[in-house]
Amino acid sequence: MVPSVLFIGAINLSNSPKGGEEYKNQLIFRKINFVDTKQSYVDTHAWKSNPVVLLNLMCKLFFMKWDCILLSTSSVSAYRLICLIKFLKPSLLSKLNYLVVGGYFSEGIRKREFKWENYKALKNIIVQGDILKQQLLRCSELKNVKVVPNFKQFNNSFIYSANNTNKFKFVFIGRISKTKGVLEIIEASQTLKFSNPLLDFQIDLYGPREEDINFPENLPVAYKGYLDIMNNQKESYERLSEYSCMLFPTYWKGEGFPGVIIDAFIAGLPVIATDWNMNKEVIEDGETGIIIPIKDAKVLAWAMLKMMENPEMVSTMSQNSLDKATDYHIDVVWSKIEKLIF
Image (cartoon, rainbow, N blue to C red):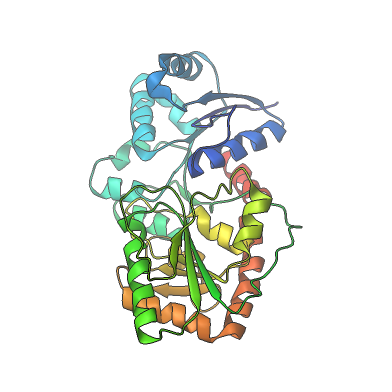
């Protein structure tokens, strides 16, 4: 008998995805369409301004029969919906698979913003790494937590051009904000130029500017706008491959399994990243990058200098990163999701 599947999440199906959540949900939606199922969906994109979305959700949830429900929304939205289901139709919870978005969920459980008891009847709570699972288990008695990593859709046959210039080029992708470590990047560049004015390097930053951060003109740090990897993969990865290393000194509280680390691996870039949430689980220190403390510009400068002074190490890390990228291809990860939900 063909199973019936309901997928709930911000898909923004008729448009290009806005952010990692919509990108991920569009990939899931396409994968479900290739499974032998009777499937339906509720696209929660912009639901606050469209009451029809909530009406559609209520009708499909409570007046139709489902063998499997996939829920992929923010922690707050997911919690409200799960509580509503528990109150109105608790039998649905055993069909529900919650794909946790971001890294705040366990913190919300710890602070009792989300009561873990409301999740214990779910079929699966799927987080993106063992670190997130252990954080969750330390503050709850949940027995249904499973681990499936983040994923991307990409072409394994992409051929990238390496950085062939003498200038060592670093890249950052993310929100231009303090909690993403942008100030530490600027300070690290100051440290490096002060200690060695002849050091030839460049740091380019891509992403939405959420805070008014100035980039001193006397430093080799430049804001390059927005790199639309989700919608222009080939061009974006070709541009990324012109760099030598990615910087990711984040300490943002909502960080989970950052998709930009997968982007770095796809383009063959090692990553200098902070010891924050999932970073040290995804990046193997000394193999695919260097792990540093948070809010420490001096150590960031040291790690950057180490990369610049050891081209053979960077070359090895680059190949390791390319090899690691295949673990996060949607086809590999989706097979793990299928085994859990069906």
